[in-house]
View 1 (cartoon, each protein chain N blue to C red):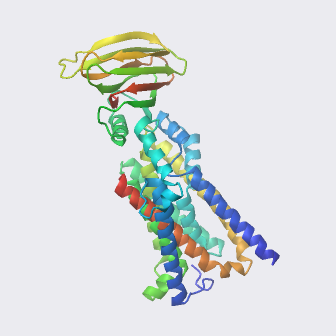
View 2: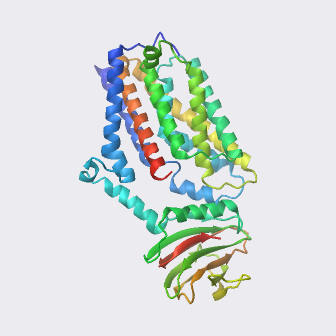
Length: 204
Length: 232
């Protein structure tokens, strides 16, 4: 540092500058930043200026689409991915009885397979549609009843295609979802849209 | 008078640049970068270089700190020394943090980065010399805050479950990218500061600028700390 260039302020101007900085920061934080970013609005100014809408929107997106999450897996049981899928779940309240809509983009690495699952109660409808970027994948749409032993599962639909859509009424309470297998040498991206009363379990 | 006008235009330009980058870069990395990071499988030197550089150029917290650090550095040699210390600090924790998988809460780290801006602005106002009666070692302070900035970078990069194989190659590319970005950002900051220093308004507005810098740091601090208590 070159002290010869740096003017030394008087104590008074230092105190004034510091107080001004703190005051300005507090005002901007409580009037604008906190209402807009987190919906925390102790002064009510954020609401008056319409800023809390921003926070509402961002939390709503987090609830409904789980942020249009990008998830991918190198391997079915890779820890990192399990964490990632878990993190997505944590962001949304997973109570039943509310219908939710989700869109998720899943990348299947070359020569790998992976599963994306939902937990559902019996007799509820799962509306779904998914499509790859045009490439064909082998898929198995299936369900595992709650408490099923020895890896029992029931297949609803198995085929090789680049897309599928429909509605499933769950025949039992348990885990329902897809297994996709990428047999090509290129990663395949799948975009999955779902609507129903479920709990997202995500990648498995 | 004309010089003052030019200064005003230049400082306005700097402020609007900062404002734009705030919009571009709300927190961490943007959606398409995130898209790439999560889908990436192997070695990708080019993209990681670019992401690192982009993070630095558009990361307003790092930029504000750099403005604070070089505000009263007039000699190129001093700028180089301080920036090297900052680079050493953040490279150490970036490499160490990612390779060892150390994940510090990003809200807390970003809050500390906010405080680093407050510290430097307060220091530029001569606050520590008045308060403590002596000047705390600036070189040590810049290196230590560099360590925190590096942990911030490491935490952001680790949010994406990077592939373990060849991790160090991508990491090194990211780190080099950060330095390239820092160099580019520094280049523009120095040009603007250089112009500004020629006019007397630099000293007239030195207090105001550092007060605003402190304000920015405090806002970042409050913003991130609230985030920690809400989502952390």
